[in-house]
Amino acid sequence: MHAKIPLAARKPQTPKWTEHAIWWHVYPLGFCGAPIRDADMTRAHRLPRLTNWLDDVVNLGASGLLLGPIFASQSHGYDSLDQFRIDPRLGDDADFDAFVSACKERGLHILLDGVFSHVGAQHPDVLRALAEGPNGPKAGLFDIDWNAPGGAAPRVFEGHTSLVRLNHASDQAVEYTIRVMNHWLARDIDGWRLDAAYSVSTGFWAHVISEVRRQHPHAWFLGEMIHGDYSRFVAESGVDSVTQYELWKAIWSSLNDKNLFELDWTLTRHNDFLASFTPNTFIGNHDVTRIASTLGPDGAVTALAILLTLGGIPSIYYGDERGLIGIKEQRLGGDDAVRPEFPETPGELPVQAQNIYRAHQDLIGLRRRNSWLTTATTTKLQLENRRYRYRSAAADASAYLDVDIDLTAAPSATITDASGQIAWKQRKL
Image 1 (cartoon, one colour):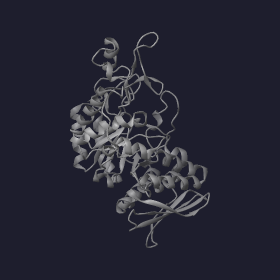
Image 2 (cartoon, one colour):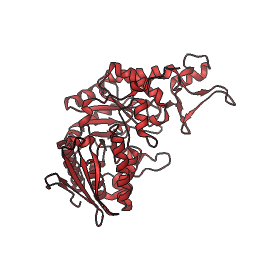
Image 3 (spheres, helix red, strand yellow):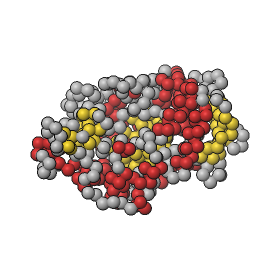
Image 4 (cartoon, helix red, strand yellow):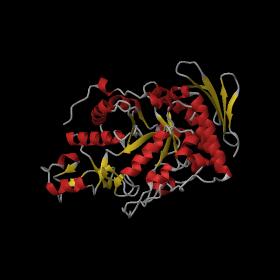
């Protein structure tokens, strides 16, 4: 059993470079056109396709890439087979090293997706543990019911029989996770997104992260949280940030329902979170319906204006900057529409896509010029169902922006600076 970490040791030590971070979130297997189901695991050097887009990421204004799974897996990446090896559908170590080098040349940070809640059911160590029994050398790594009717049965993640849980109460699981994290941090990545962090005890994360920080004090840790007590999770686990799903929901739901009271209520909670940590904010990711499918292109830009004038470390999901559509469905293959393949290079864009891309550039540029927005809190100035004016102010009260959201006709946003000048105004697409 791993040792208990004192609460004081769990406090995150957020690295300074994250104060200006804006992530471009991409699902590499989909982006690079890798086969997902009935996957051909013949090695194919697809990762360079993502390298081809790095200049476009810089032009967008992002400062880093938040990558989905890139390690050897059974299918979609979250069912890992070997987290020390690049997925052969993406390439090999040389492809990864070239990608990292290309990112660093452009000043782009890299966040990898660490799946330490579970592994694939066909993971070699799972098969070995089941074959060798409860006294075998790998038995303690996984959560296995050795006395299950009909024989030993691994406990699975959220009902998915293809996903076997690690035994997070064991030293083996702690040591395994530390080794994986340190291996890739030594290869010059900058941190980890912790998949399904909510499903693992904060004590486990506290132990792992405190040990990893000894070797890599500038690493950043982002925990996936959907529901729950965000602030407590951060304090007890030692992560730097968590995914702000409450804000994601409030932004699209308020605009969709023309009920901006919901957004105002959520921003009150968001202010509370900012008092103790800086959340990862977003309006799209690999698990949800595209914002342009929910709100249309104009509504998607309004949502972006809200996102980029609030405190937090924002991420832009690949393709949202081009107004891509895609609906998440609860079925086999239901993620495919929101995890699409991209072409080899950016190429020519349709006029509407260019306009949406320009809106992203302008709003990201506004945020970069006002870097205090990362820790800004909001104050309500005016609130109706279809009109909302709020002020985003610096933590030291040295600056502010006023944001006017108007849903009376087509969704629109206007941002005014402290001198009363319009800093950005939405144009109808």
